[in-house]
Length: 597
Image 1 (cartoon, rainbow, N blue to C red):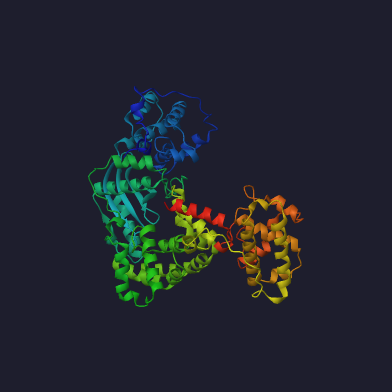
Image 2: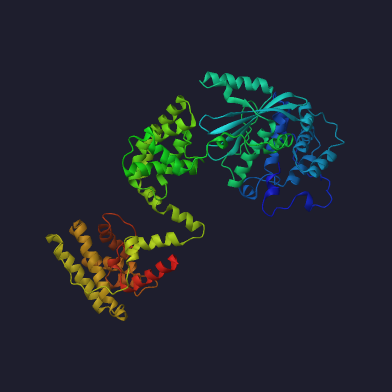
């Protein structure tokens, strides 16, 4: 295996950039009596677990620039490898001598390893046989135990470790969150003994002992390398980087990476990955849905919403789990609580049908995978557990909004601004159809029509309209607008009357007529870019003309809420092309055509 740093784009090979290898330098180091590192090394050396010191040194190496990627160093306490080695060389104590012996065996660069051995060649501190034997470690056997629902694999390696004897390394490859190495367990017991305990646990849980199968050592290497490569390609893994140490706790990843790569270098190449996910029969989303709908499992799926839900379910599993038929309790939780409620473009009817279709789809999928009845029962129970959360989430307004624009936001972040900007323009005029049909014709002059307005609020509506009329006709601030004043008047009338018809209650509350007129003019003026820093009238001047002491937006809130059926969605977009003057619509047409091209 090659350390991540030498695979980074543009990263030079460490040894190639040095010329002749320089000797390690002794640098000042903390007093070993008070150093927490010294105490940790000492505890590992004295541990009953003979592998404890090796796993600790592996974790120390894993956060150096020989393994940690650049993005990791921005947030983690990454240090140059040379700095770590120099600090250990600079303290000639038994603890650092043992650590340097372990480090030399795990360093993939032969020059680095030679420099370390040369630096400690004159030391006479005792070194545990398990550390000196690390250089001769070899892998004698391998086995694999896959999860019955393809959520992960245990790749089990039988190590012959001079100075210790038989040691078993269990590398857990997680496939529920994307293929990657997640945990590494080192058990100072022989391979056959550990495999025997695994088989006992399988039988005790109702599974077959034969599910643990021995595999060629080369295939084990290929499987682990495939998992490491997949995680590297996907970017930094969301695995906790803490190191929990010996006593049966997982070593963790990426802390175990230097040690695992040492083990991989001692294994033959030329094998093939046998990860369980790679053994699934290839099935497209379309075939999965078609076969499901044709099966007895889909007997209750009769309408378009059910079919759409089946498509949504298969697409979610294919994207999130890597296969349209991969459904486990973990995948159910991820789908219902983290993925499906936010699915781009998912319709309300299809999402509502998920509750009925998902259990049927899981039964069909498990039948195709040959999953045991107990696994199917657990997965169906997980559906019932997570459906309430799914229902709450999918109905949340913010989540529903994300389903509409999530894909557009993703495209925007990739540099494609068109979809999101076109959606914003559509929201401003009343939807995609209204955006398509937009024209730049002047709004017609319309008299105030009160027939649809409740009789008891007609008088305040007429008074507000009259105040608007006087200001548009007589204010010198807008005299330069000419005929555009007539369009503004029409837009103000339409907003005022529409809000009065939808919710006359706001007019039944006491308020200043001039304040309300200012609010209507502010709402229509901002939406049409007639009020504001680059508009015909400054906000402060509009407020001054009507004697409003506070911001005009406060005076507009009641009419805007009534217009939007009780919602405050901001005053810069009223969502109706009928309220936009010709100059604003002409600007929107130009933007529409530019983003479409």
